[in-house]
Image 1 (tube, rainbow, N blue to C red):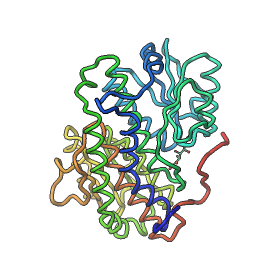
Image 2: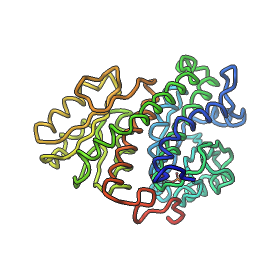
Image 3: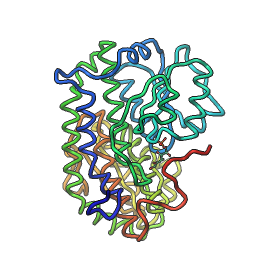
Image 4: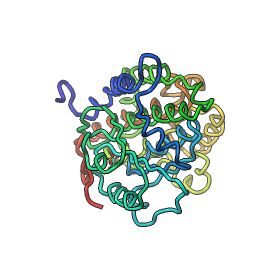
Length: 359
Ligand code: F6R
């Protein structure tokens, strides 16, 4: 039920701190150990490479997962768009393990790949919000997102739940493999910080609302830029804005601006920069100067430890591997308010269905 909310999308954005706390309760024991079946850990332990397969927003969550699995568990990870993998599978490693990320568990593009994986005889895990969904039933293992039903077509809480689940799994695999990075990563307290950060961001909705009114209410196009994990956030942020507001939005690696896209910048073009990585913050800021000098309106979404007085949206500091969980929130809010401002049905964007069961 929507209750006092005009649209489910905002309700679901607001639910994200609670979703993270639920995942903590479901997967983290009192003593800090994790509830991941031994069978699953052993199956992945025998693999030399992870293949994450997904579509849309779930694919974007997979891109973030790659960093988590590689950094915490030391397992090389590839991320594939399901529809591309289906008919043009890449050359696989000797011992692949497959992870299907899917909110609905019914996406046809992903099902097509899982059918092949089963024919080939490789093991797989489905991470999904829907128990007993097709992809859950047809994979060897299932990990549930416990995000509660997501009604708005644009995925918000399922995306943050997917990244949280990946962090839990990566930590668990890293502990199993005894990596130093996993031992040093205090998952429980880091997730508590993330939940608090999201809470403080959703409590300041009016900031995003004003930005949407000022910069996005009439613009034809918009850009999100970032580097590293901020780049992964940028492409998800762009998908969110375009799907609910119909503003043509591109998300790309900030360093790529000068290699072509900068030709699209005109007076008044909104460029939203995501900056959470200390190593590359200065570089992204200089990319911004290049677009500012061509007339762009820049909105900065910056971690508090890197922020200046001029930055418009400040993100509470969270662990460097978990920054997408905080950085996506203002982007979800910008998408929501831009759509609302333009008078659209935020929950049901034209041409889209919640679960895409055709290839
Ligand atoms: C975008 C969105 C879609 C889905 C995609 C995959 O907001 O929701 O891009 O992420 O259709 O769906 P699932 O995760 O159900 O496989």
